[in-house]
Length: 356
Image 1: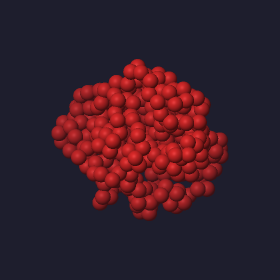
Image 2 (image 1 turned 90 degrees about the vertical axis):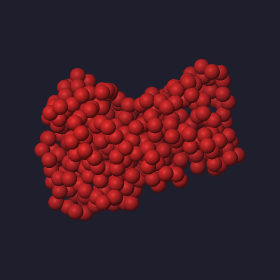
Image 3 (image 1 turned 45 degrees about the vertical axis):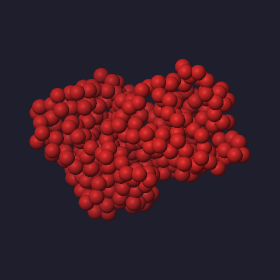
């Protein structure tokens, strides 16, 4: 809207819309907004407790917050309101059923648009038109009520347990009046009932007393470097285009970053009515390159977790780089260049993962 382009958001459900989400966003997200989001933040995280097989390794501490926790429904609704203030039209309870050229068919009639931006998540039907490949990570999480003393223990701290699940991690994120506790893994063979069992063991280990408020599972679509994210007059952003951090599973930052990238791209082509194909090159250069570096770093986390944690525990530089990367003050490439790549490459080559 700020570019003077008529646009609208079609949302299939009522706003604010509840979504299953761990609710953690890295502090680098501040660089993407020209307005303040602190009113939405439940907790400002300055510590990460890293553990391996449930045994504490070290605590990464930093004076400035590097992660915020939020309630996803309120966060998304706030952004929609900000867009509406700039002139974007919001149509909720409007489900897109089909897109043909400039015609968008919905349960509330037909909309027309020169260009269509699909932010429909991993289930996006436009992504099927260009055969987006999906590599799934499986997750299961619970919102839990705990005694006040335990809640305050996590006031500015999250917990990250590596090797709690195969090729994955377990986490505790603090919210305003509860904790979000979850597990995620990248193995195809792990079944939901196994995740349910592992989550219960994890909760019982952490908390002598707790009450589950809500339990939900959701898949995360990890990036694939050969994917196209644009064709003809449409393009994909967010998880629809696999713009997801393969290290942490964070999707919010990359959804917004890809959305801003798409807006700037459309501004440059809209008067010429060009195809969206050029966006594929821009996405590779501006986002997928960075995500590929994060994929290589994630190999330390998930395939050599004990090695990585021991290395990070001994190295002030690794811990500093990691914190600054989350804040957006340092690139993932800087962190990766500091890591012992000989160990990484030999491990990836043995497992046939070097090409992502």
